[in-house]
Every structure is written in C-alpha cells, then in structure tokens.
Image (cartoon, rainbow, N blue to C red; front, side, top):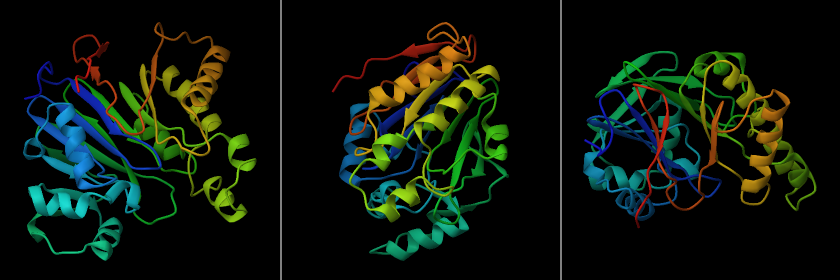
Length: 286
C-alpha cells in the first residue's frame, strides 16, 4: 500500500511527461498501475524509485498507444519484471512489431475501449482518442468514491471523450503545443500539419477551453501534460489556461487547481481524497 493513500483515494504521479517520453503512476490503496512506459527501462525504474515504488509492486502497465515515447521501455521492462500489460488489439500489433525478444505471452491482455475492466481496487475504462495510430486510447480510473482520467495524444477532444472524462475529480490533459510557436518554428511543413491536424496533438488553446468546460462540469484538479519541448513552454501553456479560466470567472485555488507535469523528473503527486475531494501535495525526496 502506498503510504498516505487511504482506501478509495486516487493518487496521480507523472513520472515524466512530454514528447521525450511518458509514464504516469496511478495508485489507490493496494493497487498501483503504470500508464505508459516511454524513454527506457532504466529511466522508468529510476523514476519509480524516486517516488519509493518498486516495479514489482505494480499491478499492471496500461498502454495508450504504440508510439516510442509511450512504449520505449516496455520491451525490456516486461521481460525484466513480468508485470501484466494491457492495450488495445491494434496497439498490441504495434508493440509486438518492435519487440526485440519474446516475453511471457500470459502477460499480454487485450482490452476494448468502452468496456470497464477490474484491476485490483480500480475499475478502468479505456476510451478512443483521435491520433495518428490505430487503437490509441485514454483511461479513466474509478474507485468507489473517486475517479481520475488520463487524456493525451489526441488531435481534438471528441464529444465522446468529453462525456467520458466529464466529472472526473482529477484529469491529466494534454497541452502539447502553442500554435504560434509551432507554425513559426523550424519543423518541416508536413510535420507541422500533422501535429496541428485532427489526428495529431492537442494545442494549448483547445486544452484551455476543455479545462474550463470540465471545471464547470465538476472537475477541480488538472495536470497539464505531454508538452512539446520545441513548440511549447510550461509558462505558455499555464498562461493560456489561466486566461481561459479567468474569462469564465473561475479562480485558481478556489475553483480549481492547476499544475504542469515535469518533462524528465517525477511531479509532486496529486492525491484525490474520497472524503473531501481536496488536493494533498507531497514533497518528493530524491
């Protein structure tokens, strides 16, 4: 059991988040799940150790899609630690295509979007995300009293995504790029078009609009994640969201909380309490 997590609480700890690699620890009493395993195995293990978790304590690894910044560590991590892995059928095809060595096939679990599964003390619902690979998905986690959602790598927020994550107590939402930085930057035109397309990534403006609407529908705690190193900055993403919230007369630390996930190091955990829905910040000691 993670220290400080009471039954039915949910804790979200981004281990690292961005175009360089992604891994998010989602925990409740007796159950810890890793969402994505980007970068490499050594980096994932180091990040877990920083937050005082051994890989063997994980109940499962959930994969959102098969791009390298989300599965870069998975091949070695699975063989080394034998943790069950869950992904959609199309994502499994992409995972198997880049595996260097076989692992125990009993660890592979296929999921369907729109169908809840039970993982320890969690119920987990995968939902489709529009991205330029088949089978891409996000996840909503439920306990008896709380819920939290992870929604990244999507060109836009569909009505189905909004309805699925609406009402989550906490959400990690993509704020990948600033439009001006992208279109005035050095990326080649086809890559700019891909990122800014319906199957690319979520821009700061669209993220900000979604945060405001989600806040008005009950969500109080937000983490901005998957920021581009080249086409965004934490202060730019934060400023864009704050401006949208001010336009709706929503006040930070009164109506909502907001933080940015670190690119290379663990971010302070967001602990959603089943009793009062408030946030608890825990300092991470390296």
